[in-house]
Image (cartoon, rainbow, N blue to C red; front, side, top):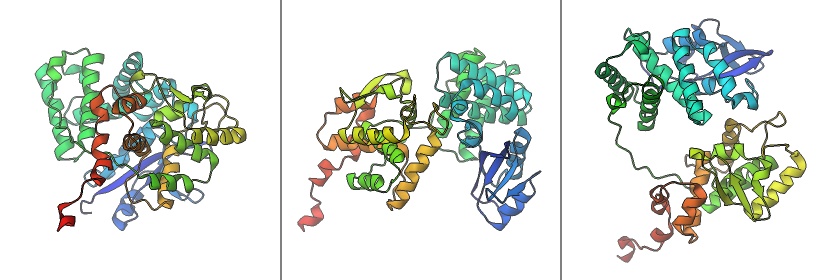
Length: 393
């Protein structure tokens, strides 16, 4: 089969209360033939999907089969963001994450990954960061294993260790064609393990980072935001999207909101331990408060403002993304919209309405005003007042 640019996505599912891994892939003849060669691959009529047994060997067989042909996306499997596989409380627990690692990876890897996660928990990193770092480190351990280094601890020479890391980063850039953000995440994960877990001299790992690209965030117009809300019929789903936009929340901040964080007397939403473990207050819109009260009367959450199917558990990130995706499709918006786009739109619309950048910085929870200033580049207020020289001809 000739080399093609395909993505094979793995997602955890349950069939008759047993864990399996669902495969999503382009339905081309070549890819289908390769999928059929996977060990113990089966088709579920009920779920209408191809699936394989859960476990490290099954995942490794997918990597081996599609090596040099496509990208295998294991994020959903490793982060367990699928509610069919785990409950929300299990999904967002360090304890359940520890238990999952030995099931997914062989012993020579698991011992290092567990050590990494323990250190990250000790430093009070967010679980999402721990999941990303673990995924990145296991890929680096794979790279070392292929080069004959089964145990990273045996690489004691600092210069050799740095050279191996630089070679790996070159591989993911030149061969795997990864993005600059992926490159940074890989470097951060390996550096953290070497410096904080193995306590190696940090000066050896002062590796050159990619030049930062100055990308402008995607911003929705007010009409597009209205259309998204209009095309979201479910009251709970509408309340979720309105809360994110009206308060400028990150997705993690939304799902961590508890009922007590809504201060209707002061018209504030309290964000507890947002990014960087910082608390802050943000806006509680009057329209948002009305929709939240309607939602509360119907769903009656017990602890978290937005709960999963099981009482007292957090709503999942995946579900929030799916809600927005459906609304965007119905609204026929052609832009690449993510949940974070609502936060960017919140900040830009405030700026266009004359709100001072310092207040926007505080509402967003930015450390530096430089981060907030990016919204001056996407605001259309000034641009609309400038006339193109073509119009003067």
